[in-house]
Image 1 (tube, rainbow, N blue to C red):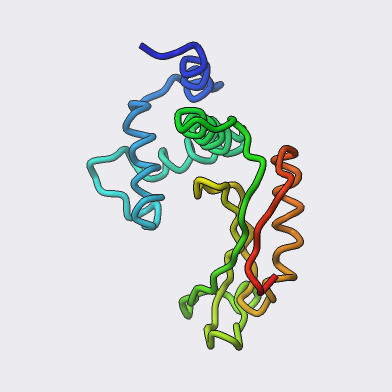
Image 2: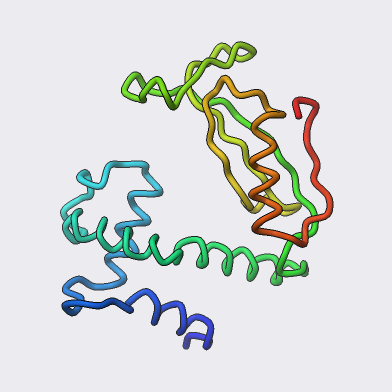
Length: 172
């Protein structure tokens, strides 16, 4: 049986205006998870799932309401509580990683990381002490770690006012 908090989340997932749902909610969530897990295009969804256009429409509608982020935040909070921590983190760690971009990625969104000899993008992430993801900022690979850390720390401060300590490596 779902807790009251879980029922509220499920009620928000199915809340929609217009015609009634045609596809099973579980199939929609599973299809979105499949796209995220395997990094495929929406059109490449296997035929076992509902049509890709319907799945994408659900994802867009849920994203506009901020539901995916709220679900992740609640799950992170539950994991932290189960492991004996406070629901909201008070410390974190930041780092970045350069990732090669495909030739199809536009030049405006990729750059060259001279230190690692990589042409692509750079992801700047913040995690809590348990390694749970808190915030992500994606930049061109040419952005220095210290320059990418500024928007990341601003986002981290906006989302988690409880954080008072952040560790970083020598690049920041």
